[in-house]
Length: 161
Image 1 (cartoon, rainbow, N blue to C red):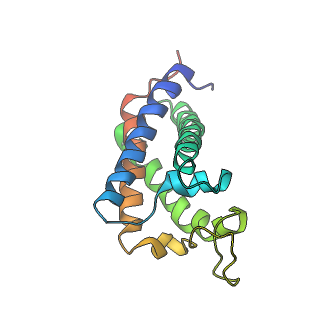
Image 2 (image 1 turned 45 degrees about the horizontal axis):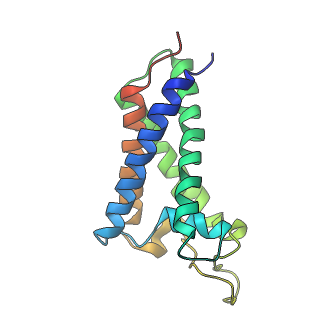
C-alpha cells in the first residue's frame, strides 16, 4: 500500500489552494477573522508583512502531508470517491477545530493564552475551542474549507498502479 505520489503532489497542491482560497474568502467576506497564513507565519516570524508568505508556504507543505494521509486511506480502501474525501475532510476539520485550536497557544510563540496574562510578544489572540474567538461563523467556514479539500482529493486522486 503505497500512495500515488504524482497524484498526491498535484491534487494535494490543488486541494490546499482550494482550502486556502475558501478560508481567505471567508475572511474577506467577514465570516471569520482567522487567517491561516498569518497564524502559521507568525510561528516563524514576528514581521507581519512577511509572516503571511511564510505561513502560506507552511500551509502548502501541511496540505501535502495531509494529502498523503488521505491517499493512504484511499489506498487502504482501494478506492477514492468524492464523498469519501468529503467525509475525511469533515473529520480533518473537526480535529483542527476541537483538538488543535485549543492547544495552539501552547506551541505558538506569538499567541496569547487563555490561561496567562497578555505578554508583550503576543501578536495573536488564542482561537479557543472551535476557533470561536475568531467569530461564531469560523467553525462553519473551516469545516466547509476542509470538506472541499477532501472532496477535491477524493474526486481527482488516482490509486497507485
